[in-house]
Amino acid sequence: MASRKKPIVWSIAGSDSGGGAGIQADLATFHDFGVHGCTVITAITAQNSFAVGHVSVTPRRTLAAQINALDSDLQADVIKLGMLADEDVVGMVAKYLDTYRGFVVCDPVLTSSTGGDLTDGNLGECLIEKLLPRCDLLTPNLSEAESILNRAIKGLDDVERAAADIVALGARAVLIKGGHLTARNNQRHDYWTDGVDGFWLSGANVDTLNTHGTGCTLSSAIAAGLARGYALPDALVIAKAYVSQGLRMGVQLGGGPGPVAHVGWPQQLIDFPSLSRRLPQSGPRPVFPSCEGELGLYPVVDSAEWIERLLVCGVKTIQLRVKNLQGEALRKEVARAVALGREYSARVFINDFWQLAIAEGAYGVHLGQEDLDIADIEAIANAGLRLGVSTHTYYEVARAHGLQPSYIAIGPVYRTTSKDMPYSPQGLMQLRRWVGVLGDNYTLTAIGGIDIKRAKEVLLTGVKSIAMISAITQAENPEAVVAELMAMIDDAPSQ
Image 1 (cartoon, helix red, strand yellow):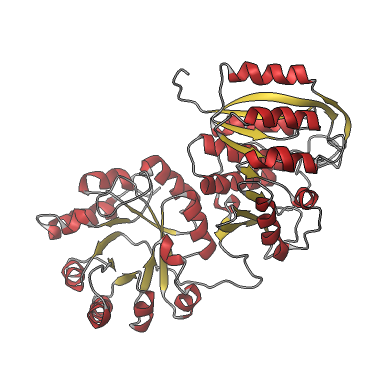
Image 2 (cartoon, rainbow, N blue to C red):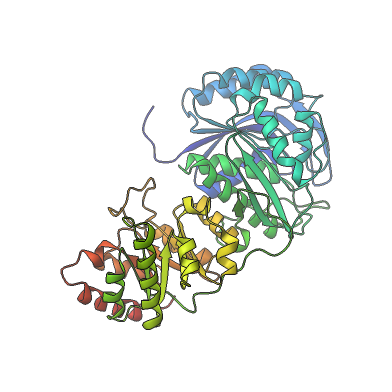
């Protein structure tokens, strides 16, 4: 196959004559995500914003011809499955997928959002037997999940068990969409699991009747995100934000409910979900104090000695990240760092050791993503400490957003040598995007591979703080570097 720069995604689904769902919604989504969309049309429907009037299933020969034409020339990076109409269609698609090695997202469309029947009977058993074993991700809504399981799902508390049972039936992972479930904290909650790990995605409850095509749009956005190279958890976050944006901006076009809007890559925090490993409970969440202004130059050092050396230079935000001490020696190092912060009226954050940070009365604590699994977040908030969280991906930003910390660290901006990183550098363009999405609501700091030569272009993204490690601690004259960086940050243009 010839090399190409633009990913290809197939949509194997039905055509919606009203333009709001099916193939039409998928192609609009693919366009917004910058991927090339190819189509295998499984059925032609006659529908408008009120109802489905007629469904004509694609003949086997025509269906096979579409698949063969694409397979010989425009192979898919990812395949999205939508309306499959009848058992013959399911069987033919399943046969092709037996030899396909890419990712498959399946939206098990059984009815339209207007309530019209899109199949010629109960396809549940056929889908389970022939298709589920080849689905990398199944995206049912509540009624579709109930049909697959042949039982009622009684509210949010029953969703995790239902998702696990669907995976046990053969799907490699499942995302149960929460649009038809009761809102909690004025949010709608989706649940993903692969049978081992799982998490909830919670987004604002958008009060609108213009919901036509939500399922098609979500699944095609996930497929497009995967084709763009995003990991599945990131693709899920981006797709939910995209649909939330579409719901918020949808307009009525006919006499019935309007379609989800397709208006480009999501850019506003209001549309981005928060992420939690547990279903968010009703009531208030832990609240962390603000950082009382921008963080500015933010050195990360491994000793109280370095903290004192840099606070003397006028640094007002600094982090103690100790890796080679334990026991009483560690406690004394943390205590000295905290005392220096008070002496110089500086913001001293303690990396990882949240219990010691609480015990010694630190200004704040900084946690990596792995530490969020074991730290007592509520205890940190109750102690009045600020919380900073490291993020590297959309998934991790969504998880931080669920905590609403005092600041969010975005990185690595460039490749870094300070620690082994399983993530590719985010780059200036993505940093600028995060500043646009998060900057009005969160204090941000950029980190990762930033040196004095790169600092100016980093600041041009609009970020107001730069965290640095080796650029300072390995410099021949750290004091001179700090003075130059502080002046650069002070002189950076406001966005």
